[in-house]
Length: 309
Image 1 (cartoon, rainbow, N blue to C red):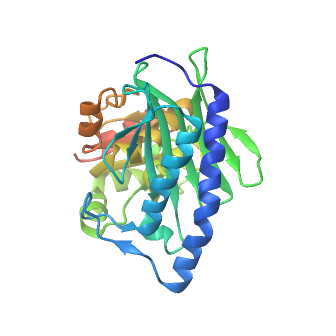
Image 2: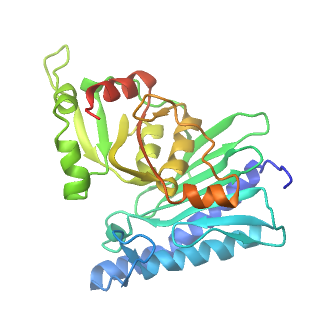
């Protein structure tokens, strides 16, 4: 396995690849929403998750398009077992993909996201991450590793405007907008609703007597991207945990923007995601992780101190 740090030009190429894929899938999802023909499949890999023809189409499309820009890589998609693509039997790069996140909402034309992360097995860290928003004007969140060892993050709008991500929120808990993937009534929403100490802290009045704290719903890696951009102040998952394809791309983007992600013991989550051997990749793809992500470390700790684990 040879080491080769991808260039920012490769990040740009893959970002265009993601935009192309989103452009192609968007009208199909709108049509599915308008007609009610959502093309649901039986999900044999993840029984409790929604799976559609659109997930499977994007899974295959990414594999084809990535093969045109990467000579050899390990393709680790939510929709299939990891596989080596190309002539090199032991490639350095592992491409982690969640082709269509929140697909149950995407086929209703409400929310739809796509995650792609390029991980260097020799460096034991991600070197490119892209999270695409299919239906909104803020379209891409991108992070990449520079040759000098630094990481950069930016967002790109649908009309091509670029904005560096380097100033996440400095809010404290009583002023914060904290999000959570609370859509599943019993396994997620109920767990959050039972966090009375956290909800009381979030609802505490500020110096002017007004309560500014808010709870909101968000999804997968995009929730950490929203923190990276300063659109929200923090996001957390304390119930079921996120799979690696939901957490890691957004985690790297938030890291590159200067934010913080900790586990429920207060330890920073490392960039080594355990994608270093095929055995590790298979294990990692079947595990979940609970976390708190915030624009600043103090807020992450405030949230951790207020939740009942």
